[in-house]
Image 1 (cartoon, rainbow, N blue to C red):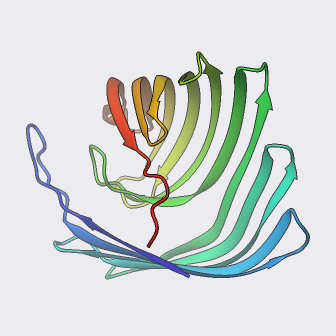
Image 2 (tube, rainbow, N blue to C red):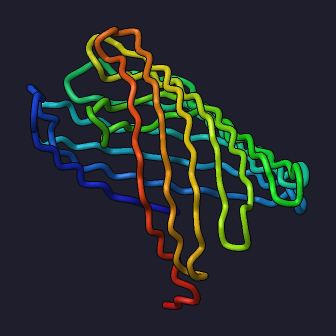
Length: 232
């Protein structure tokens, strides 16, 4: 069993005309699993999402029972799949439902002693809130490839390319985006628990609504703390 809570708070700024409503989001889940051998696990589960807005946006609940499996089918290769049927109960609006298919498949290849390539893809649904816009309930499909190279004992470089298709269910009019991302990163492991990284990301968003299309380039410096041996 598991649960999580998110509080979303927004304020308008600059040229934004419409301010998104603040919200509370609760995610609840339960799973019953059984191992069918060393590399295969089957399960049944239930996922529940509840979103409550402070303003005029409509609250909703998502009820999603399903079945799935996790399979390690080779060295550095896995397939996780879940199939269910969701029903979204929206206050004072027409409800929607459909098949929920979550797929996560990945494989890593060792190209040389220093270089590896990882490929993964997936699909499912999510709530898209913390970006330039509050876009709500979203069905997505994505694929990503990552090339990693060890420059030295403590330094590595990564180059990745990704494609993601988002189908937004709560926008008016309906909206679908195709998102292409290229990212380069150099990381340095200062200590076992401390990592520094510098990344440059270029992203192109193509939409079926012309004025929602844009391109962006962002540079980020990150410091990651990974405490070792904490116990509680």
